[in-house]
Image (tube, rainbow, N blue to C red):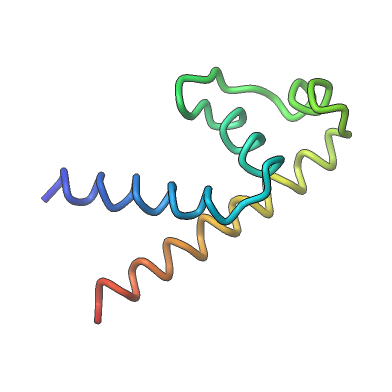
Length: 80
């Protein structure tokens, strides 16, 4: 049961990543330390991408919205 749940979470994140822009994916990976990356601050990511800290925050927020929408959609499909 736990393995199925982890698999569903992994699949949901992968689906969400496919719906994101390149910058949204980059921000999410670096903010949360995904795929072996270190967690990084908004400022650090902003400096590297030559974007403001606020723009990085906006990209993170949009990316998280995509993750939440994808997760909601996955839960609805499981109920059917």
